Amino acid sequence: MKTKKIIEIQNVTKTYNMGDIKLNALENISLTVSRGEFLIIIGPSGSGKSTLMNIVGCLDLPSYGKVYLDNKDITKMSESNLAKLRGKTIGFIFQQFNLMPTLTALENVVLPLEFQNVNPTKARKEALDKLKIVDLEDRINHLPKELSGGQQQRVAIARALCGNPEIILADEPTGNLDSKTGIFIMDFLKELHEKGKTIIVVTHDLNISKYGDRIIHLIDGKINKIEEKR
Figure 1 (cartoon, helix red, strand yellow):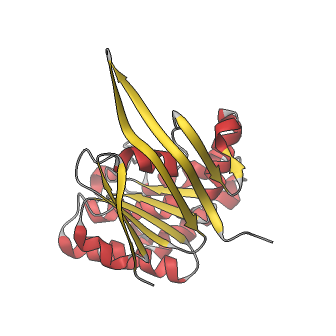
Figure 2 (cartoon, rainbow, N blue to C red):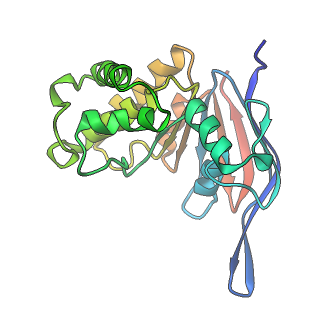
Figure 3 (cartoon, rainbow, N blue to C red):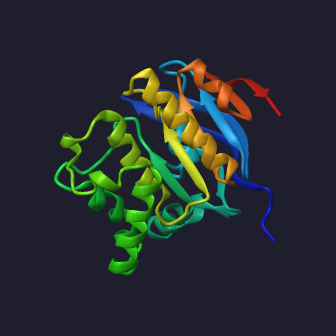
C-alpha cells in the first residue's frame, strides 16, 4: 500500500562556501509533499526557491538534514541508484526547455526512455503518444530552433511525461512564454493534476499561485508562509 507522502524534507539546510564566507541558501526547511498534490513554491530572486527545487527534485543533496523520495532516504543512495529512482519517479520541465538543439522533437522526447534502456520500438511509440497529447504530432521531425517557445515547452512536457512519472516538477514553466501560451501550459498541468499526477511548480509569479492546492512562500532561504487552498 502506498503512503500519502511522496517527498519528505526534514530539517534541510543547504550551505555554499563563497571563499571565506558560508552562505545558507536554505535554512532548516521541513516540508512534505503528498501524492496527488498541486504544490506551488513561490519566492523572489534570491529566496532559495531554485535550491529548494533541486532538493525537492533530488537533483542535489542537502548539507544537513534528510530527504526522502517515495520513502527512500536519498542522502544514503549512490548517484546511479538515485538517478534510476529519480528517472522513474519525477518528470522535469525547465524554464529554458533544455532541449538538445541537434535532435528533433521526437528524438528529444525519446531521450529519457533511452536512458532507462526501454526497447527502442516501445520508446518511439510512447514518445509519439506523448507528443500527440500535447498536440505536436505534426512537428515530430522539427528541430527546437524550428519551433516556437510554446511548442518547445510542449515538447519538454511530452518528454517529462515519458515513463509515466508520478511527479511533474516544473521550474518557471511560463517564464519564457507569452501570457496566452503560459495559461495554456498551466491549464495543461492542472489537467495532469486532475488525472492524479503530483505537480510541483517553482515560480516567482504570484498569478500562478491560483492553480495550487498549497502555496509555500520562501524568503531568504526560509519558509515564510504556507497557504492552504483546499
